[in-house]
Amino acid sequence: MLNIVLFGPPGAGKGTQSEKLIDKYKLIHLSTGDIFRANIKGATELGTLAKSYMDKGQLVPDEVTIKMLESEVNKHPDANGFIFDGFPRTKAQAEALDNLLKSKSTSITMMLALEVEEGELKKRLLLRGANSGRADDQNPEVIQNRINVYNNETFPVKDYFTAQNKYKGIHGIGEIDEIFNMLCNEIDAVK
Ligand code: AMP
Image (cartoon, rainbow, N blue to C red; front, side, top):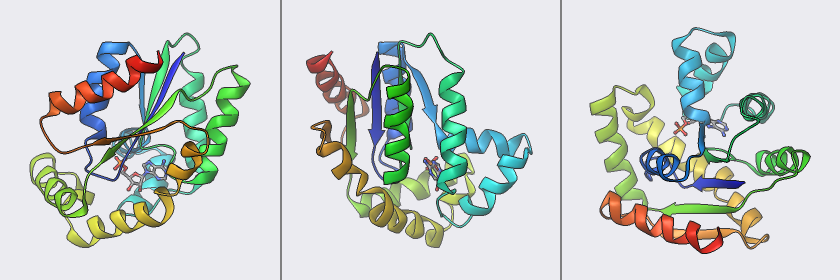
């Protein structure tokens, strides 16, 4: 199986590149943000809970997020592999993911990280907010909070995968196809 963690701050291009990667490598795309947003749209209990955190730019608690991710993985027993987009965002989530995959006799192949500096992220997020109507992309304070949460809670997940020799950083500014090719080169080198 090819199991990729696509890592990076909000606005780094994870969603855009995931779409292209799943198409090329026939993987299942699991974006925890997208799943939460679908739950909000469907007015589920999970959606109501998630919204209270997302509106402020905070992380949804690990326990809830991990349980949801596990149930999504379990829906695809015949998958070629997965792209985890926006997960794991904490060390506890990274450990839970490793344990889940281990129980299925597989593991994370690599963490591909899109590296983009903060000023560029803010510009991209505000533009996305104006175009998509995503509430958490429209408020500069919420955007700043998400970037702070990323720096404090999520960035250390890099060390977790570096220690396993699985971290690959990619410069995330440039043409979409150019960045996509760099990601593919990293994948093809380990496949
Ligand atoms: P995203 O679409 O990945 O930018 O996520 C949007 C929001 O959903 C985040 O700001 C968090 O509030 C929540 N979220 C998404 N993924 C996670 C996660 N792995 N852990 C906790 N909260 C998450």
